[in-house]
Length: 179
Image (cartoon, rainbow, N blue to C red; front, top):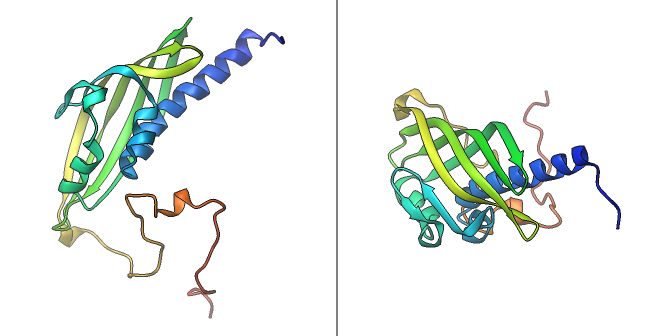
C-alpha cells in the first residue's frame, strides 16, 4: 500500500470537504434531495434559521424553497477549512439570489459554519449553523430581463441540462452579434 504524504492527504481531504458544501447548494437548486443530503452524515443537525433540527427531517427543504420562489441560485465563495485528524471545521461564504413569483428579487449573503467528520473514510457535515449577514429585495421595476428563448432555461429537476451526460447542444445555429 502506498503512503500518501501528509500535504497531499490534506489537499484530498479539503477537496472532499468542498464537495460536501457544493452538494448542498446544487441539491437545493436542482431540488435533488439525494445530492443535497450527500454532503451530510445521517446523524447531522442543521440550524438554518427557519429550520433547526436533524438532517433526517430536512427532506422537503428544496420543495419549500420552490413554494416561495420561482428561480433560486445558491453560490458558495470564500472558504476556510481547518482539519484536525478525522474532524474539521469549515467556514464558507454564500450568496443566494431568489426570484419571487411577483418578480421581486431577494438577495442574501452569509456564511455556512460547518463541523465535519470523516467516518469510514468519508467526509460529511455533522453540524451546520447558517449565519445570515445581510439581505435585500429588488423590486421588479428595477430589474431587467433577457428576451425569452435566448438561453436554455433552468429547471429544478433532472430535466436540467446539468444532468445530461454527455452534454450535447441541440439548438440551431444562431449568431445575434453578426453584422
